[in-house]
Amino acid sequence: MTDKIKFFKEAIRTLKTSGTVMPSSSFLAKKMLRNIHFASADVIVEFGPGNGAITKFILRKLNPTALLICFEINENFYKTLTEIKHSQLIVLKSSAENLEEELHKLGVSEVNYIISSLPLSMLPEKITDVILTQSYQVLRSNGTFTQYQYSLSNRKKLKLFFRNAISLKFEFLNFPPAFIYLCKKVG
Ligand SMILES: C[S@@+](CC[C@H](N)C(=O)[O-])C[C@H]1O[C@@H](n2cnc3c(N)ncnc32)[C@H](O)[C@@H]1O
Image 1 (cartoon, rainbow, N blue to C red):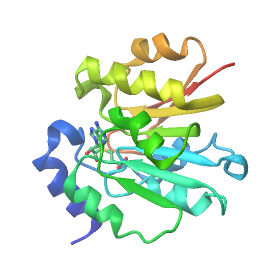
Image 2 (image 1 turned 180 degrees about the horizontal axis):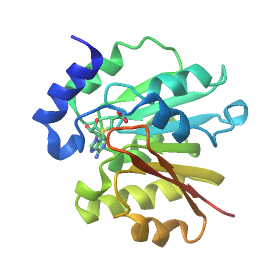
Image 3 (image 1 turned 90 degrees about the vertical axis):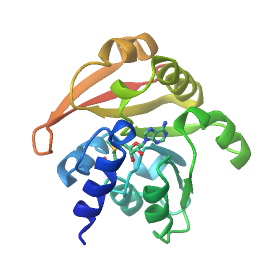
């Protein structure tokens, strides 16, 4: 079975938390990572890696001393991710809302970048608020929170946290086509 079919089966079974039926295309994955300065990034966090469609591109570019910390709640996606043998990859079966607690356990206080595929529009608002509050808190100054979404439904919410430091991109070559928010922590 191909990775896409495996993803489709699992995503259909857990649609409420997966929020899609297809993994991200390589076009979307690469565009999500375009602003990252990998040479100077020590810690990158990924929320909702699924079966690793974006993860694999991050791992290819990670500098030799950097860490990639992934948060995934789906048991089967988590198992798939743990099969990626990479010494700089930490996969946690934990919700993004536990960000600060999990980083604390790892002895990490700040992160350079957060790459999120979370289905924000499907999460309860309280959970979204916890995730965005903690994300803003742990990001280093000038760090970015990058999120894709198939609509602009969470634009206002992201503005509450990142104010005007948000730029928007669009990737047509994905199913479905997706908006990408690049949210910068200024100051
Ligand atoms: C739209 S899929 C994206 C998968 C993959 N990153 C991609 O782009 O193909 C969303 C992923 O977020 C995960 N997810 C949903 N809620 C989550 C949460 N609170 N914390 C961590 N992961 C979550 C789902 O299990 C799913 O793997």
